[in-house]
Amino acid sequence: MHKVFHVMRHEFRLATANKAYVILTILGPFLIFAITVLPTLISRNPGTIAGGKPLYVLSASPEAEAALAAAFDPMNIEVLPAENEAGGKASALAGSAVGFFVLETGWPDAGKAVWYSRTGTEAAFYSAASAVLAGQARWTRIASSGVDPAVLARLLSDPVFEVVKLEAGGGEETKDDEDFLQILFTAMSFVMLLYMTVLLYGQLIGRSVVLEKTSKTVEIMLSSVTSRVLMFGKIFGLGAAGLIQYSVWVLMALTLTKLVGPALGLSLPPAVSPANLGWLVLFFVLAFFLYSSAYAALGAASEDEHHLGQIAWPLLMFLVVPLVMIGAIISNPDSPIAVFLSIFPMTSPIVMLMRILVSPPPAWHIALCLVLLVASVAGMALLAAKVFRVGILMTGKRPRIREILRWVLVR
Image (cartoon, rainbow, N blue to C red):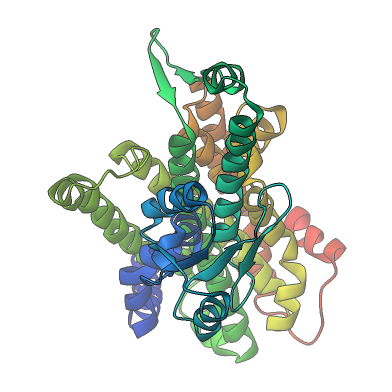
């Protein structure tokens, strides 16, 4: 253990004594937020990208213009009347306006509505305008038909629809689209943190092993320590660096939810709770040891970094599959495929974390997941140690899968 500690300390210093580690530790959660949450928030609040620019409208219908002004007001976009068509187009082309909207004479029956802009890609804006004008056109036609508007309003009104989440003990909680989006944002942030850190540290261990192997440095190191000590020292050293990062991130999240949020009057997602942050750290630790052991073995069996990338792609697939299925798993966390992936050790850290964030699964699901995951970590470590012992000193050829299996079974 004394030698393991020395190797661990050496790997820890190599991992933490650089600017990239410090920057990622401080800015990591903000980068994940920017990648996963910010684009959706902007799409829900398109006025944030308008930069205070107005929307010019040229219309002979005061009602339609008022409806557009009411629709764009929550976006903090002012709707102004244009003096003429040429001036409105010039403003849109110059970029001094979000766009220019024209309701031709005779609208909604004879004329058409036209959106002019510099790029033609402001889908959030012209989709909102189109929806408003569709409703306004409907009521304009109703008014001209002589039918009682009150009767039609009752006939066309939507019935009340609610989504209620059932909780253990008989509790009920009403949900809406906002709640779904909060769970989705939180799950995406947690999953991206887990995916990126596990992949980053796993590849870091694999490349470190390959570099020491190809540079013959490992031969000097093995004169002082055994291959098992070297492998576990590397894993524990990088694991300690990862735990420090997660400690900083959890502390930042707790500070944000408990102090900064209430002080600023911000409503933060309830899924960002101490319990869920604890699950995040636990699954990171288990996933880290599982994948790091596998990457250490593959690094020892690789001839160079290119070869490592070729034989490590199955590990990457196990991490990518839950990532691309995040929407389906959150929408239906108790489906057979979600349950299977949450118990299968190679995918369970990510998928079980998602299920816990959405709605805590049965306790035996979590217990089975943890038991299989811990057993897989122990088994992977033993197998990796056997491969590491033989492969770390082999150079000059690329071992075949059959040969690697023989290292595990025979030696």
